Length: 208
Ligand code: URA
Image (tube, rainbow, N blue to C red; front, side):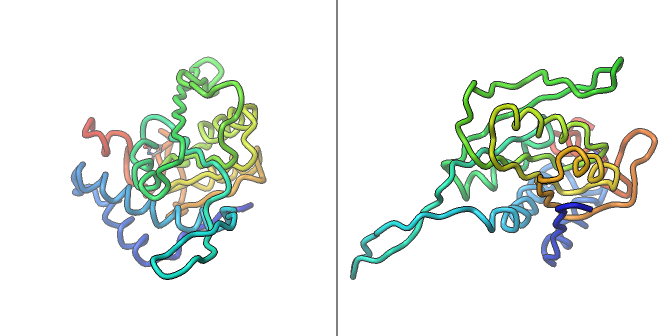
């Protein structure tokens, strides 16, 4: 299954169960997305590069470190938005670059309707944020966009995936690491992840 890392953290499992529950309201749903994202980001960010720096405590001078690489958070609109805030609080210097995609009904391929990336890359590590890796079409397209932009290292952070989505992303971009809270059973004929959690956008934004 390529570079797929599924969280084993008990808190992620506990919170994911609450997230799946159809009776969880929108406010709680957003809180849970934020919290589970943090647990997944903890794993995904383990290999961030550091550079040593000197710092003065009230008692002495000592060697510490700071993050070496500029980091970009790339939420896929709209359901990726709820995954931004928690990581951004931990890494306030991260840049946030939104990507919006729709499906061309003729070609069935994702087309970008929102992409304000500047010509030259401003970050070297990109974290794509999308809670649901379903068919994988949006994730594959977003990685293509980021590679063309010049991002050197790209990771995908999601909450749930279908095997079809993992397979599509891994086949198209085998070097992209995929971090998840769970890998579900399948997609249904409407492209929903089963058992899943329903529509992650509608449940976050109260638009169901
Ligand atoms: N997007 C969602 O919001 N839910 C799914 O199950 C699949 C894609």
